[in-house]
Amino acid sequence: MKKLKGIKLLLVDDEPNILQFLEMGLQEEGFEVQTAQDGMAAVTLAKQFQPHIIILDVMMPGMDGFEVCRMLKKTENVAIIMLTAKDEVDDRVKGLTLGADDYMMKPFSFEELLARIQARIRNQFPNLLGEVELGAFRIDDRRKEILYEQRVLELSTTEYELLKFLVLNHGLVLSKAKILDKVWGYDFGGDENIVEVYIRSLREKLNDKEHRLIRTLRGAGYRVDL
Image (cartoon, rainbow, N blue to C red; front, side, top):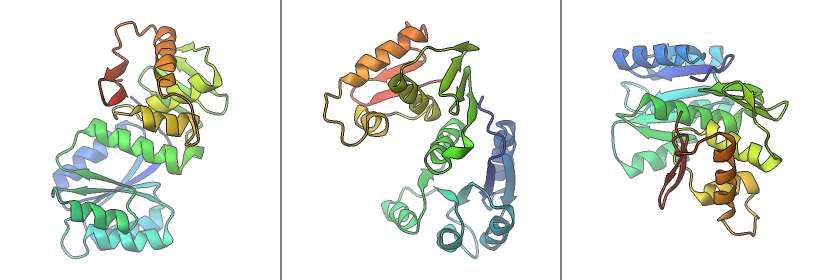
């Protein structure tokens, strides 16, 4: 399990059972967690607590999640992941237009939420990821070093960036195009099959002969399972 100490999360939902479940799970992961059950309390607490990430339910009595998002994005440096029980494109568009950084529909898996939180931290607060433990991996970005099962992996610069990207986004399906964009850069003009070459090399170094760690999803991309 990943241990991300020093990273603050604010959970906002009017359902106490959901709040309790998420709070316990995220605290176990090493996060510092605060909770709020309505929009006004969320705005007040966000200004006091200064969270890095807010998990924000859309449908709440009084001030809804859209208004909370709009208010906080004006003044706070925070990543907001919005939750909704509605499968409505208009809701997602509205949330993203107001500044939300990601969107998840209820019900969702705890593992997917963790993966999305990790992605937001990596993209918006990379300075917090000096050293991160994820499953059997330990990523030390200051030393540009990755340990797997307490063994330092001998990686090239590109292998390091690729494995870091895969592990930090574990649980998510990553297409070759997205991997090329994030690891090689948007202006890379080579063949996207280079991703396969590097994945093969990483599997060898991880002794992942049966592809249980770095999985291939045909026609979709790759997913790291921890």
